[in-house]
Image 1 (cartoon, one colour):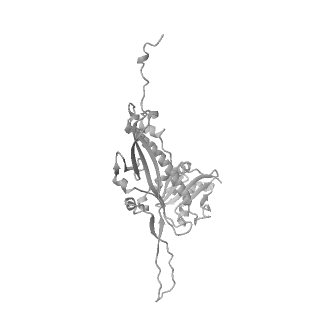
Image 2 (cartoon, helix red, strand yellow):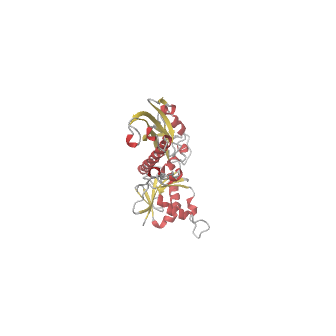
Image 3 (cartoon, rainbow, N blue to C red):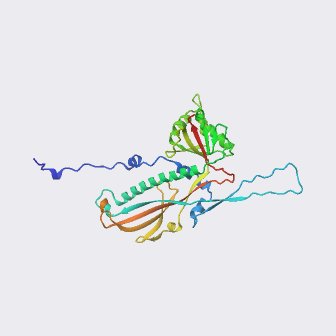
Length: 339
């Protein structure tokens, strides 16, 4: 017999997963914190950052005073010949990364998802992807700018090309070795340590070995600020990989086109504006908004669907402190060997 109540069967009950839970699981960002190290204290790394951001054109040159070794005499003279310091410049290289979000109108008609909510989640996913890509770029920058000079070779580790290798037997005193090694290179604390995520296994254990334990290892962590990244993968022969930088040795700069800052154009023909990042409010995108007609019939909309296309572009420059000494940079690679 046919179901006489078939037309009035209750619809399946539905409920939205809480947004904060959704973002902690399905929409979770990649666990990589390299960008935090580049943004830390960048206004002190580049003291005129505000002027660079406000400039009508991109700043292409950074000026600095060069190191100068003066002659040290051993006797007075009535005809002394003086010396003076000099200046140098370093080029700033700018690049662009962007993503594009479409915002149709009719696709959301008769849907539980409103146009505003659909846009917000598209923007969230796009930024999440963008910052994962940016951490790839920053990691490549670290690797490309490693110091090939380390004056501590043989003092607690072996330096080859651009990598200071610490023996497995010394893993529990890693920071206690690194700190004096960097001091041998004339750098003072504090330091940034950008490392692979599994290093947390060791650092958390050693940090917990405090004064109340028979072996106190926690003392060595003072002066180090750590940033774990899933993007950093140690070689099979190593327990861990680190990029250690004296604080304020690196920075990520951004710049916005003056036309975007002012807001230029019309809604009908397209316009320029800016947008402050959801994930990193210190950084601001240039935005180009274009209105057009699109066919969203296959996506639940209609053949004639008014659609906004929004292009978000970040103008950025990755900066390291300049050195006149050949091979010297502010970025030091350390590995902990399995042997």
